[in-house]
Every structure is written in C-alpha cells, then in structure tokens.
Image (cartoon, rainbow, N blue to C red; front, top):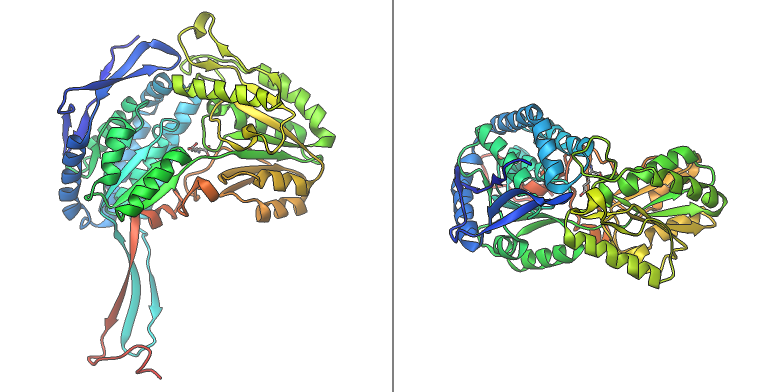
Length: 497
Ligand code: UN1
C-alpha cells in the first residue's frame, strides 16, 4: 500500500485546498481499505476563483497563435507518453480497470494530444466568392471563452483529454471538474498541463461533487460553454440549466448498445467481440455491449460458446497482471447492478451465468460482480432498454435481419452499435438504418478512435460530436467576415441585380 496522495485544486497556477478545509476520499474499488487520495470538497467559492482565473487568462490565451498553443498540447502528449506507466498504475488503483485497459486509456489521451497539436496548424475556415465585385468573403473559427469540462470516472484520462485538448488548441481556457471517484488521475493530468508550461489560469482544476461544484459551474455567468459526459438524467438537468443561462452545451450521455449476430456471421469473431464489448472495463463504458441480438439459427451454439468464454474471465484487482475483469467503481454502481438483476428476474429473464456479488477471499473488500448473462429477454423488458453500466449482457432472439435492426433501434439511446454478418448487402443496410452515432461492421461496440467523431443520437447526445475535427465545432464559433475593397457602398441583394 502506498501513502495516500493529497490532491488539491489548481487555480491560476496555485495548488489550493478548499477554503472550508473539508476533504473527500478516493478509495481503491478492489480494496476499499486502501485510501488512494484525499481531495478538496470544494464549492462555489473555489468555482468563483477558478472562473475569475480562467476569464483573466482567456484575454491573452485567445491571442496566442494557434500553432504556438499547439506546441503546448504537443508537450502534454510527450509528458503523458513519458509517464504512461505510472499513470496507468494509478488509474488501475483508483478506479479499478485492468492495467492493459488503463494503458489504453492513457494512450487515448496521448493520441488525442498529437492529433489536436496538428489541428493548431489547420483550424481551417472557408473562403467563398462574394455576390458583389471587389468584395472578399470568408469564415474563421473563434474561441468560445471559458469552458467547464465535467468528466466521468470510467475514462479518467481519455475523456478529460478529448475535451480539454481541442478546447485549448482553439484558444479557450478551461475548468476541469472530474468525477469524485478519480481525483488522483485528474490531478496527475493537471500536473502534466502545468509541466507543459501552459500560462497561469489557462487550465484550472476544481475537485468536488456534482451537486456542489458541477452545479456552481453550470449556473455561473462567467462560464461560456459546458461539456458534460455522464448519465442522461444528469445531462438533461445540465442541458436545461445551460439553456436557461445561455451557455453552449455539449452532452455525452448514456447508451444501450447492441451487437447483432446474423446466421451468416463468423461466429468465433462475433464471440470474441461480444465478450470484449460486454465485459471489457467491467461493462462500465457508455459504448459497452449490453444487448446481444442473436439470429435463432445460431443462438444455441453461440450461447454455449459465450457461456464457455465468459466463465473463463478472471476477476480481480485491475493492478494484478492476469485480471480480465476488474471491480465496479463504487458501492452505488454495485447496488445499481444488483437492482437490475432483481428487475431482470422479476420480468422473467433467465439467469444463465453470474448474477452474484463476490464477497469471499480477495473479493471481500471490493465491489466485485460476476460477469452475467441473461436469456429469454424480450425487447420490452426494462433490462433490454435501460442502461445498467456493469458486467451484464442480455440475449434477445430474432428471426430476421429486419427484426434485428428494429430491436436494436428500440431504445431511447443511440450511441454505439455492431453487426456481424458476411453479407455485404446487410452490412450496408445496417449502416443506413441503425439509429446510432457509431456503427461497427464485424467489430465490437467499443473501441472508438480519437480522430473520428464520437457521440450519439436520441437521448445519448444533443447533436454534438466529440473527438475528431468535429470537436472543433464544439469549441469554436464561426465568424463570417466580409471585406469590401470597392471603396463604395455595395448593397447585397440589391446592387448586383
Ligand atoms: C466512454 O465509455 O464514455 O470507444 C468512452 C470506446 C472508448 C471510449 C469510450 N474509446 O469504447
């Protein structure tokens, strides 16, 4: 056991406790005896100070040439790369995911840094002919201002990087409000921002709860943009508040992702995809596979193999090298999964595998839940429609491709989706007809890459996309510029007719 870290807020280049002196704790979900870090229980006082710092810094940061801003982002990437292993170990201790996945999470941040560093030399606008003579027309991107970034615990480095790096390269200043479960990872990332030499006030970090810090941020008149990743329920509130207070808001919310396996699929491939998609990160991804929609001709064979493969998964602490599936992140998530298991059984689903909290031996002091497979699930059941966010997958049988697509779409969410088929016609129909932001053909529902848009439709998102060049549309406004070099008044829509 290592000495607990003392995390602090970071405001205008200074590490500070909450004015009240109050702190909260971050504990290892695989062994709650281990205190990973303490962190400030901040409130509106700290939010006010951070907003003030970010507003001041914005005045000059927006004027730093974008390629120079990009150099800082590049340095962030280099530092993340240097400290990748150290950070991955911390992540596995702090939120429980297996080391290989923690390394992947940090790598996603590194990829993001190098990608957005490149954007510093692009940030293209458009030029277009004017309808009038001796007149020039163009569009340029301008930053939004001060951005509040409210991030979840399941990707403690990747998601803060998705949000902060494009925000910064576009010329905004930021206040990061990480989830209460991952203060140490967020502090580590903030140290990297500091070491990269970003000017004071450009990056600020305020720890604390959503009710206290998150709320103060979204209500604050000094915040111009809120980017939020979390539940659809909280997202709806964030969106409503931002609507009322006239802030730009980008919401990345829940999912109920499905993988379809058709009778013509490569079954071994589909099986590997299903196990990884459903139980990777203990099912705690918004892209996790929580429904398997199986053609009746292959269902029995596929299910037998799925049970076989799933029962081989090794549960344990993320930090142990042979762990496949780590614990859930906290007691509330464990309770949520248990609750849905009860709902499933009361709705008539049949438990094929798992379904229990593990409490013996090494599991005694952690939030471990067995990888779980439920059969005889019908599309109307709550467990087929509501997000569980745990190691639980439901099996739904279908008779046709059309039925499979209809069931896949039969949810209020629309993030990720997957179809396993060898039929190219079906593949293209799926790409066209699936209602989701992301569709994989012959790949699992998880594994988005940082240079492509990430986000969903329906109750998953509010029309924005993170990552890729689409994130630039979140973090900039378009300005349309007309330059009239005719020396006379030219009246559009009038003088050229
Ligand atoms: C999330 O679960 O919120 O596509 C993000 C994936 C990861 C990102 C998931 N690259 O599964």
